[in-house]
Image (cartoon, rainbow, N blue to C red; front, side, top):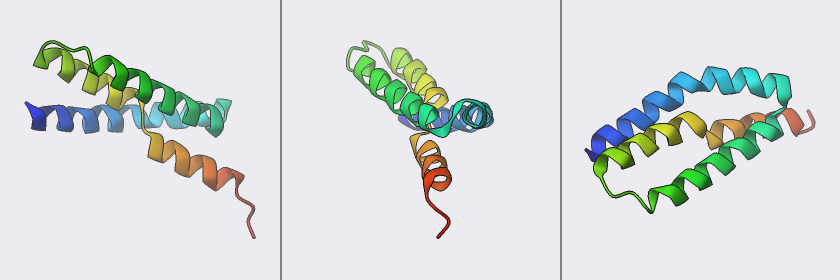
Length: 84
């Protein structure tokens, strides 16, 4: 079950990454970084109250779909750092 949770997190993250990229181009990378951090924090807090492995699995899928903090941080730094 643990391996499945890790795998589905990665699958959800890879499926939603293009969506977050388009939204970052449209609304700004800083907003997407804030979204990724906020959703990750909220979902981790909710995970403290799960009572079944299925609930944890569902939350891990949502976490993968809603986060992607490293990609958002890299994009934000790349767009705000001066060229020199």
